[in-house]
Image (cartoon, rainbow, N blue to C red; front, side, top):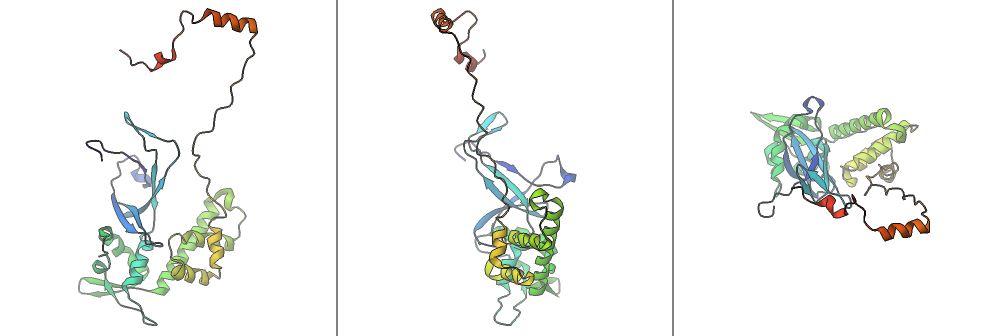
Length: 270
C-alpha cells in the first residue's frame, strides 16, 4: 500500500457449483511447500485448502472497475488435498528412529510450527482427515496421532488410481491411446510435485515398479500449452496503389472540411 492507494490484484479461485455466483470469502495462509519446504501461499475457503499460483504476462494490465491496475499478473488457486501438507509434519513429529514406528503426538503440538501460524488454522481440517494416514489413539477428549507407513502408502496409491482414471476419461486427445501403466507413470509424476523424492516418491515408485527418473520425465512429456504473452499481431494492411498525379493533388489540397485531427479523439468531453 502506498499512502492511501491500495494495490489491487486479480485472483481466480475454485468454488463448488452450488456456490457459484456468491461471494467467496477465504483466509490466506503461508505454509511450507510439502516437497521443497519453501514458504508458499494457500487459501482456506470453507475448510477447503487451495494452493495459489502466480502468472505474469508481458505487457499486461487489468481494468478493475473504473481504474486500471498496471500490474497485469494473475493469481489462480486450485484445490489441494491437505494431507499432502500434513505428511512432512507427521513425518517429523513421530521422531522415528531405526525400526521403531515412532511417537504419538497431539495435533495442537504438531501444528505449532515456528514462523508459520497458518498451520493452526488447519486444525479442524486435519482432525477430520488424519485418520486416513495415521494410527489414532484417544486419551480422554484428546486424540494422538502417529503416521502409519502402510496407510499413507495406500492413500497415495488411491491418489494415483484416481488421477489415472480422471486422465483417461477427461484428459482429452493428449492422453488418448496411453496404456494403464503409462497413465499411472504420468500420475506418479504429477504427485512428485508434492512429495520429497528421497522418501514418499521412492516408496510410491518402488510399489508400482516404476523408475523414479521415468516418473519425473513423464511429468513433462505432455506439457500444458502456455498462455500467449501478447495477442498475435494484426495482418499487414493492404496498400492500394495511387497514381502519382492524384497523390500530388491530394498533398496540395491539404486538410479538407470535415477532417478531424487525431488528437481530437482523446479530448475530454465538455
